[in-house]
Image 1 (cartoon, one colour):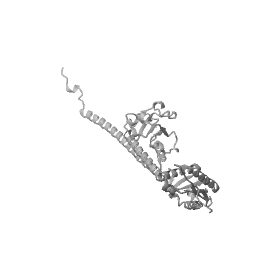
Image 2 (image 1 turned 60 degrees about the vertical axis):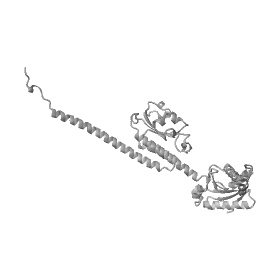
Image 3 (image 1 turned 90 degrees about the horizontal axis):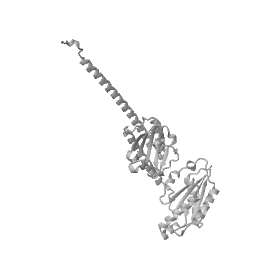
Image 4 (image 1 turned 90 degrees about the vertical axis):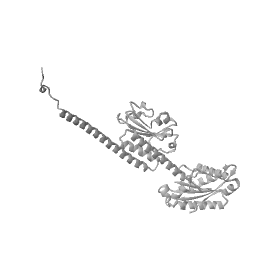
Length: 365
């Protein structure tokens, strides 16, 4: 039996091809839409990163920089935890970060970062079922579902770790790309290293290399100010000016090495006689200045007498020495210029030296 061609429907190839093209076109549109969405997300991320970099660079010191990082990362990137772990044995260990919560900046001991294997990972993405999945987490971190750990510093020279965490399990997934996070880690590492370097240079520039106390460069910006500008309004300030008796003779006869030992000893003795809030400055050579805020003239005179007595009882490499000391005073009503206060104490010191040294003289004004 012969069947006619009309007995079977002939496939409409044109319609089939059209439908397939429409499906492919829909898939392409969906893919392009997803790519555009990711592009917009990346642009937004980098825009936030550039804004963060600008704020970080404007930070005045290391503590302010860390505070900015902690606050801005958490707020701008919608994170549930941002934490800095620093190696106490690294250069960060010398930084004063007392104004930041111990929960936000945590100190680790030498070798802990390396023992965690972080230098090999650079960025470590992990899912969390509980805080026990990562030993540095705390009990209050319970509920975090995913975390990114960013290595700060290079390899074995790493000085810290930045932790970013979320309650969302999809926020940080082990197979995600880490290019953005690596860039962020590099920016933060370099910025922190530069900030610490700048801070150290700033400290060194106003620190006497021999005695470790403030030097004349520290004093100069304040010299033309009123004492209220430096120490606060309505505060009386006493000034003590000290000079080692016969110091030139010590250098000439015993050598500069012994002279340096004398200066170090004088610095230590002066520091032992004053409070932590008082300011001690080596003005140059064997001359030292002490500022005593909220200290009466009578009390300052007693402190000066204690300094003279302490120095007379001291020896440096069998070299006994003494000091001539002058005291001046600015009451809370006078508010003298700092340079005027220092000059008055200096003149009183020269009177003490003219009277034989090893004594205290008070400025009469």
